[in-house]
Structures are given as C-alpha cells and as structure tokens.
Length: 431
Image (spheres, rainbow, N blue to C red):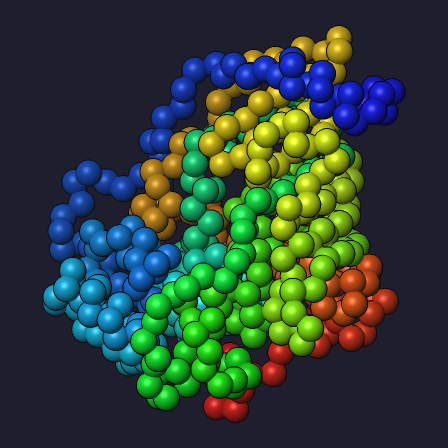
C-alpha cells in the first residue's frame, strides 16, 4: 500500500518505473457535433463579439468563419484592429449596443471577469447561444445564475477552457474512469504560473470608456495596472491565479472523477498587499468532495505561487495534476500523462472511448447549428467555476475552513462568507 513507505520514496520509485498506458485503437470524432461538410454559406451564424483582443482575439479567430455582425471593445485601438479584419461588421465601445440588434444567433464574451455575467445573462435571456471565456463569472452567485438561465432558456453554451478540447485530457479521463490506478481518493493540482504585474503600455482611456470598463465594480481612480492582463490581480475585477487557472487544471479532476460541489474548503495564503485589494500570489486550498455513486470521497489540494506537493519536484513539472488511487498514481499536464503503478500492480490497456474534439469553438458552432452538445457548457463550467470562488472566499474571510452548503450557496459556519458570494453592483448596473 502507499502508506507502507514514505511519499518521497514512493516518488523516486515511481519516476523510475513510470509507464505509458496503451490504448486499443483510435476513435473518430464523427458524431452529431460534427458540422456538415455540405452546409451552405448562407447558413452561417450571425454573431456578436464583445472583447476583441488577447483572449478575445483568439476567440474571435475561433469563430471567424461565421458572420461577424458586430464587434465591441472599449479600447479603440484594439477595436480598430479587429475591424480591419471584419470591415463589414458594426463596431461599438458599449456592449449594450450589441443588444440593440435582434438578428444575432449568438454572442462571444471575452471581457475581464467582472464584466462577464451581465452581457452573458442578457444573451441567455434572449435565448441566444453564448460562448464565454473562463472563469465563467466573477462571483459564485453569478455562476449559479448563468447555469439556471442556460437551463431555463435551453441555450447552447460553451465556457472557454480550451484545454478541455485536447486529446490528452480525454485519454486521462478514460484511464481514471477505467480504473487503471484504482479508485481515486486524493488529487494534487499545482501551477507554476507567475502573476508578476506586467507592463501593458496603454493609452489612458477617456473617462467615459473607463467608466464602462469599471462597469458594476466599485469605482476606483484609473491605474494602469487595472487594465488588460493585470486586472486579474485585483479583487474588484478578477480572482488571481486561482480563478485564472483552476478551470484549466482542475477541469481534468472534475471531468475524470465527476466532482461537483465540495463539502469543506480551507485556503492558506500569503498576502500580496497590505490593503487587501489583491489576491495572494502564494496560495494553497484544501477541498473535500463527497463520495459519488461507487467512488470514494476525494481530497483535492490546489497549490500556486511556487507551492506544490511534498516531493513533487522529482516529477520536474512546474504545473501538473496528480491522481492518487489505490493501485497507483497518474500524473498529467496539458499535453502529457504518465502512470506509476504500485509494486505488484500492472497498468492495463484502455480502449479509447471519448471522441477527439473537432475544436473548442467548432464544437459550439456545430452545436448551435445542429442542436448537438458541447463538452464544457455553462451547466458544467459554472459548477467548475464555483469551486474556485469558494477557495477565494475562504481566503478572504480570514483563511477559515468553510462548511459548505452548495444548494444554499452559503458557509453554514461562517455568515460573513455571504459578503463574497454575491456583491452589490455599482449604481446603474443590474444583473
């Protein structure tokens, strides 16, 4: 058993004996989500795109084969660059103008996190399809609302955790669900991303555009580190590395183990600033997930800012997901995986069963056209996003262990957590 010798001894033996599990033949991606090759050009979707550069630019490229009718961004330079590629598209710097139209099939939202929920909710209430960059929302309440609106209006949705579409994740999910390493009771997820503030080199926006950018968040005087990439590191606009990367790395554990809502969460971290306006760089979050069907409870630990599992340096992975089962361990990242079996155990071949994706954006486009399914709809992506928010809530209430009531969205032992489940919007903004 794993407990018979030390973690470091196990890791050393495991790395020496690591194996790759064979797969019994490829599987095609043909199916209802595959777009028809005979589709005529006039059947293209009519789309609006809110946020057109950086991740927004990548998402715009991903849907560029459709009819892009309206482009929106508060940064005039970025908007002009996108307009050069789509000269027939209407342009605007206020997302509300996108909804002046009634001829759209869907909307792609790639704004900073604090501006996701309002345009996405309007899209869903109209019954249009929605694609939104991860994390789905800035708050837990917003995530739950978007899940409800998706279900009520039967909308086709996709959250932009693009790694979900990769072949490697599918192979890992197949191995875990086939029981190659036995029932999994422990997962470690660590990231090596640096969140050093970047020089973004922006023009100072005019007051009107900056006011729109702030949107429902508390108004603060303009600071260059609020804008573009650096907004991630202010509580008013983002959630730090936890919300930035959770939906990529912990997605693998959620998918493979059918995780949903944690029962307890406790975060430990080192403050970044004395004023408490910024998420921590170094953070560790312990999550307990209940048993599911015949699967045991799972203890998942998240590490960031240089923290990682004891002994994990031997794997030489700056970021990774480590599953611990009763028969061995499986280590994965975005593009690789390796199995480490206990002495006397042997990894068995696994039959590929999950079709490779036609592409994260292509899935969404095809599903809108055919009525098929996507692999990261808001009903999944919203639930995944919620766990990241609960980790940040634990940190923000003083690094307290939260007893979590998922149905009521509250910590039964910590009333003050409610202050971070849902925040008051600035006057003039409603969800």
